[in-house]
Image 1: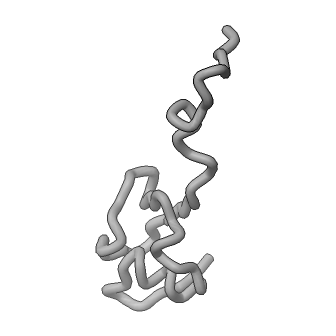
Image 2: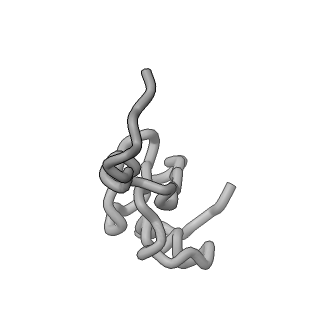
Length: 68
């Protein structure tokens, strides 16, 4: 658990953890998507997700077929 001062934003948490905000794809607070400027409230949980090989359908070559 990380204790932060009142008025801390999601981006502030990333900074505290040494994670560049530009490297994060999505952040969730209590299971809901939030922008970096969201101000955290007492006892909230933050989940941070980096981009993970996104856009796989668009990046597939025309010769690749989906198997179902």
